[in-house]
Image (cartoon, rainbow, N blue to C red; front, top):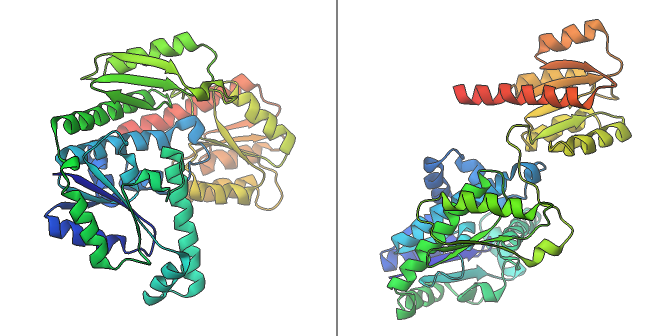
Length: 405
């Protein structure tokens, strides 16, 4: 028995191929939505966030929060459980979560040229312009995802056992090729294959334990032996190694653990461990560009990650796509002023704590802001330690609310 994973370009008949192949073999059909639902039941990540991790680029705050890495680690655990179940046809982005070392997996890619895909879209009622826009968007997401996981192009032939050109194959031909190859003895669930699947799950659980403590590090395992590779420069390497070893050894099933420096360690990027005592998703809103950029740099020195926008409309647009925990908001800005931003924010995103930081406000402004739900009202120039402590208190309030939910 085997597992079949199918990664398909949009308008390449992926669902039809997967459904027909699964039906012919008597296999269970699972897709990204089903995987996300399964993983969500085992943890605190919503299906929407898990899907977003596979299909969207990392958010503005991800380098401070490691949210994408946490979601990917959880998805790997879920995928490892599917691989261990056997007799599964998997369709979607999650197919690339399975490492190449797992031998009982038939890896299939469905792709076609642009002309063929645009024609398929037209047959489904889409106008040419709309079809091309969707193909471009979904191909871009596919390339970003595979680059993130495998450092390859999405349709690179070396990633797959079978790469099917769907502009040259009909449905029956594609399905028959998959079914015939899935029955190969090379894909049988031998003891070796089961060990490989167990190693996949063990590595995923160690990765989850590490990212849960703020570490962004990939993990592999072989025959129960865990390898942790550091691929970013770190200032105190020995201390990091000790922490990683301690966390990994606490994971059930882990025996031998080794930490090594990978080739990326010698590049210029600096390794940062997330600090869960301070907000990692802070939005700074101020039209004084030099001031706010300097403020962002000073906060980063205190392990507080921040994004910067320069007016009220930018701030409102930002929170539609991202999820800041704390906003530091100036009052006097061109266009939409800080009080109006605060009013709209508390109406539409009440969970965001807002710290007013202004050099021009009056006592009446302070009273208005506090009535509208601001967490604190500070005046410029502000002591950076006072601002940091205020952020810590705002974040403590957010965590307290989350604990009561």
